[in-house]
Length: 89
Image (cartoon, rainbow, N blue to C red; front, side, top):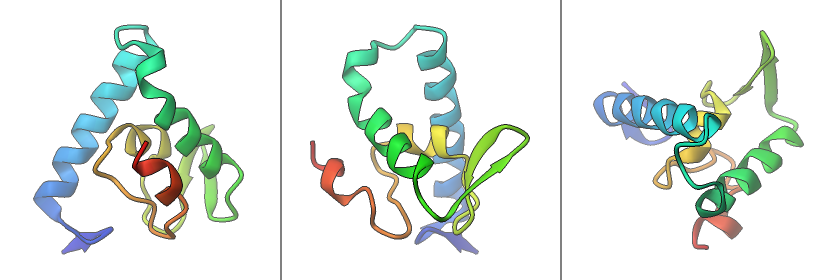
């Protein structure tokens, strides 16, 4: 089983890592200026036709990922390729 081209174990580790980073970022434990790529990714997803708001949380309707957490992990990619311009920054 895979999602976004990754095996289930790798995907699970990215989910845990992304959620932990997002939580730390949200409460100020991570320097906000270092994660400008996250804001850019999140903004792309907020305006994307494939986004889905569920219980006031932003998800991707293609890969079913929680966008704020997925966007935190540099190794993650947008399934439609919309993050390509900022992935290398």
